[in-house]
Image (cartoon, rainbow, N blue to C red; front, side):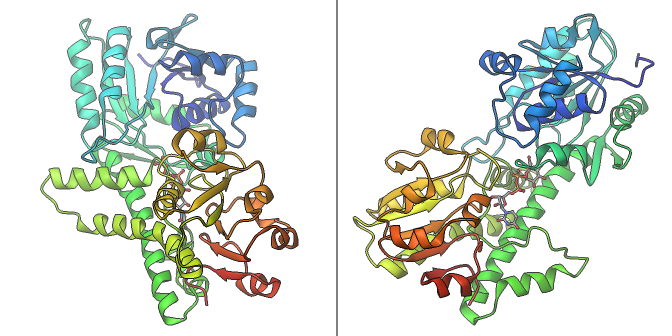
Length: 442
Ligand code: UGA
């Protein structure tokens, strides 16, 4: 039975970017939310008010909703489902789905959650899949829950893909372009509408479960395609003398194309696009469709990362013993996330060529130290640039927009700046005395 109240009792399993942000935001719009994680350390930190991830505005809404007694943390699904006299009507699954070596998604964590929920639910429950998963995952969740649901408690499995971006996760969650709800029954649809009712300005799209699962895959793959497309166009601009900024602007003003995700750079990274692209390709192949376009998107992205290495070689010739300073390490600004960051492949390539690498990132240094070895981490951009043979802009953090370039010119050995994100104005940089290279801009 769905309770007769505007507030929904929710349990969210997984306190990563999606789980924790969704939990905090669902509490912010008035629901009672218990966030569960099997990682005791994370839950202990959260109970102390310490965020395990860096995300703008997250700490504030977590603290606020804990204080208002709308947001709680628990170490087991059992506790999350029956928390201080409250029974969860909706259980969101937001656990990790890392890629396996063949590119398919590893869904074993989801299976475990499904089993635990089945063993602990006590009345009608809607189990909502929020992680990015291949089509038919919900069908597998349903099978698993049925197998372990010995008391035959009624339940539905629904899909509610999340479209938030790291770095703007809280505001993306609270102001979505759309909410997609893939539901198998009217009862589940009713609960969804209740959950998202306070977000009056957002459109809810009700679909069947498989379509909802596919919407997420198709959206992420389309956005990746847009980025690889504009990067390929930037390469043509470079060869023809056209200007990618003007070309992207001219294209983007066409409403059918749109101007977002048309920023040329050294490729996309992060835990979503590379993984989802691979998983969508794999899934299509499994179903007998060769989605070759997605392979091309991947290939363009891989070669795009090496653009910066080629440019350094064009300026410095041999890299053996030369010092390269990298500004930025995270896969994009405003996040400490280093997963699939282009900087990792770029650093590996530079090290292979015998270069010494120095790097600085405003926020992701601690995470970077865990995955990058054999380079010098600097305390600030100036220490990083001191005596470097060449500077490379990898991540377009605001801090790098405001660099004191007069100081940089005094510190750096050669005034060479390779801009992997087209952050600076070419004419201005050259006027200041830099040998300046950017993507597809004359
Ligand atoms: C992406 C999607 O944008 C979200 O909608 C989705 O919910 C999320 O994946 C997910 O599946 O969880 P995110 O990975 O946080 O979000 O990052 P984006 O802001 O989309 O950027 C991804 C990458 O594309 C970054 O490396 C960024 O530098 C690059 N990018 C983005 C470009 O190179 N050019 C652009 O014009 C835009």
